Length: 304
Image 1 (cartoon, one colour):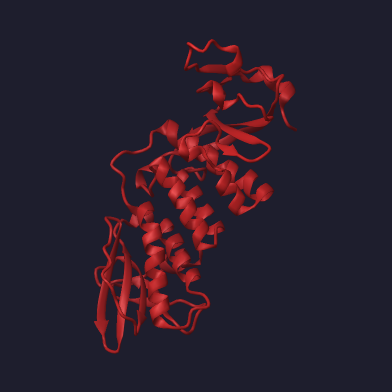
Image 2: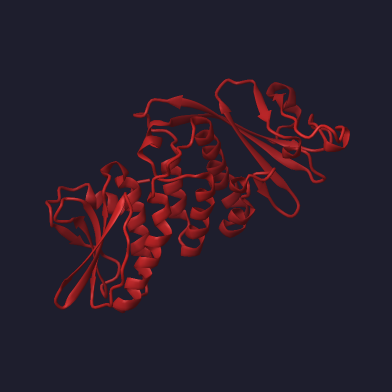
């Protein structure tokens, strides 16, 4: 999801060249390239600096040029420019209504610490299967939960990252989201508890077709960036980031190679008549069961 700052940084900047951002004339906020030619968001003010440690992806520089100190966040990996611009947009948004340099400095540092974990490469990468699953949950969060329940309640109900039995749980219903390869006729249920409940719920199934990296389709980095832009409030962004951290997700350039086209999406009402296994019908000596449901056989339960 390309924003205004992406459009600005897509221009030809020489090393050491910056342009001042609009939106808060009281603060000196800039984007451009630092002396090493790295894309940079910079704040210049008369504040009291503190020690800040950068990461492998975003480096932090603090210098003094009387009467100002400068705080710069620079992108080490240009492949992540689009997502760095989402980070910069959040920095700019967070300073709206702030008119003194010390408060602005503390706010910018706080926002950086919240984003840092998303720009910290994890040693273990998500598999293609895990990426597809996360894409499905993010699509459902954005397209179904946010419009129906609002931002805060939707995030509160999203329990998929905690590896609970249901992906979304509310007081009177629940949603289990499955993502399968396009054309597959069955959906795997990983445990009895995924569909077994005293409450009626919904089974949502996304079908995705893997495309070439050059295809303008779905990828997990873009979805995360888009949702971060939707979540304007810092506390919601932080909450969302912490959920993603439980998946082991970060803004990895490798995920740009996993691009998909959504070929189908259906929801099914899971009630007592829905074909599912129930714990009460299973001998207690059997603790773990996985099974598959034939999708054409559950058409009568589809929610139109």
